[in-house]
Image (cartoon, rainbow, N blue to C red; front, side, top):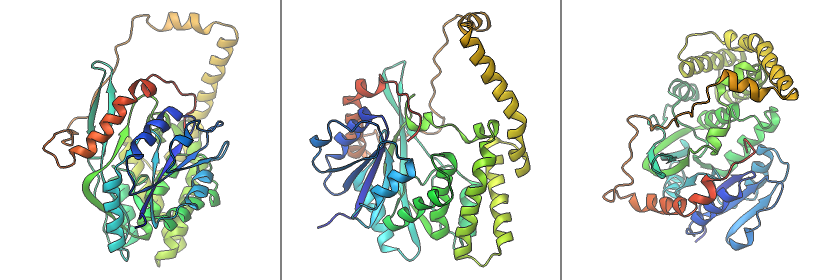
Length: 373
């Protein structure tokens, strides 16, 4: 019987993480595993994993390697995952089966996601729920689904199981709208485009585990608020908006102007929720101009100090030499139960736990120079 689901692993200069990931997925035969690697050097141990489809894309942009690899996928459904995280194949297949049985209404499905983080005080991994707000989005109209997700944006569909053709079409839009290697707006598009096309189903099962250590992808990518300090918001918001406006035009009767106002309104409410403020869209566009001179002035000053070899001396004067306490916390009310043996999902959780403990010294001690896929 042919597999229904493929898992596409994205990696970039992190072969220690890739090895950990492949050691985990090599235990499953019910999914196809593909790797899109944009590192300069090929993964030296690729031949040790005969069932894995490995593709090397040195110098490729993220959407280029994703599109090219997705076009090699042979299954009707697919999901993407970073090299430092884990999708639970058996439960991802449940998501694919739900979409298959409800394809007239649903285009994507996802389950519960947990996070793990190395506790520096105990030298053990702590586990907690990743997205307490994760839920089904089943409104009948595309506008209501977009509104629902923007209004309570507490989880990402980047890992959701989707129809392979929808995934290919969605990632091709990154090239069409010149989003290149931009990450935050790209992630928002990955969340909104599927909801324009259909409904999302949340299935109450352990779906994935995400690494949140110091060199995990989620910790290395700049947050959306940082865009306001470099005018990146002004650069990337227009193509992001145009893409959603065009997508809505394919499935709604709203006029062009109505679609533009709709996206502006609910994206602004999303920003205000994220920043706990009540501002207009013009504020977010204009703030980049105010911050930019100050940003470049500081960068120039640091550059001059380094050239004069004064930066170390200044640091000693400005900053205390006292050792800093290591900050560490687990979000409140995010406890998980999968690490309890009475939970039916315990065996799936245990497989991931065993792999990360086995590879602990390989991955947690390595510093990476790259910052995104």
